[in-house]
Amino acid sequence: MKVTFLGTGTSQGIPIIGSTHPVCLSEDSRDKRLRVSILVEWGTHTYVVDCGPDFRQQMLSNNVEKIDGILFTHEHADHTAGLDDIRPFFFRQGDIPVYAHKRVLEGLKRRFDYIFDNENKYPGAPSVQTYEIKNNSPLRLGGIDIIPVNVLHNQLQVFGFRFGDFAYLTDVKRVEEEEIKKLQGLKALVVNALRIDPHPSHFNLEEALAFIERIQPERAYLTHISHLLGFHAEVEKTLPENVFLAYDNLVIDV
Ligand SMILES: [Zn+2]
Image 1 (tube, rainbow, N blue to C red):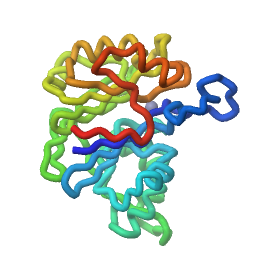
Image 2: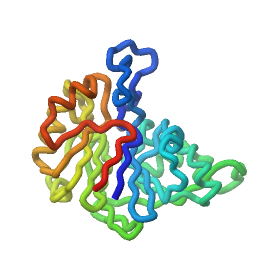
Image 3: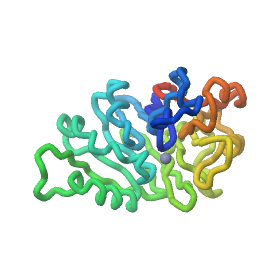
């Protein structure tokens, strides 16, 4: 399985528009972070997790020619605002499958009514096929089981996903015991680490490292990073041996 980090930044991305913070002015390409998303590929199958405002740019820079579906973690704009840009895939492939919690599907239907509404459809508008994700009911996609993992983003339910020995969790602040059991024996874990200081709805660096220590994956990658975490090159030096800061366009094999 091949995983590409399409974006590793928090909701505003890095650099933030108009910011003069040193991390926003950094010339290290690893300090330039689009909104979080990953591309997961196995065999001939290609799925993306989330579809934020940088989706078009991410598809172009990674030469993605087709997607078999989009899995949504939750409805926040940094994870969903690029949905209109599925148009080129829709024109070539037909309705694009989207997988999400019922609440998230309802939210997307309100925001992108012209995509979900099949009556009086404008000819250029894309269409989707919707599939509800329920906790404790794995999705069977491309011959493998994808296990939803329920996590909490402050009070909001968010889905993480386990694909074989790889798991992707973003926008996490808390994980219940029964969900932690779904994360045993991982070769690679991705989890969010926003910044150094605590935050009400995201793990900070210390909480992310404690969570990794608890889960014990072979290796772990941090994502959903704000400029307040610091420079990539400096933060990475402080991490345990098997923990890495993800960066945009990093590719890992699991
Ligand atoms: Zn987010």
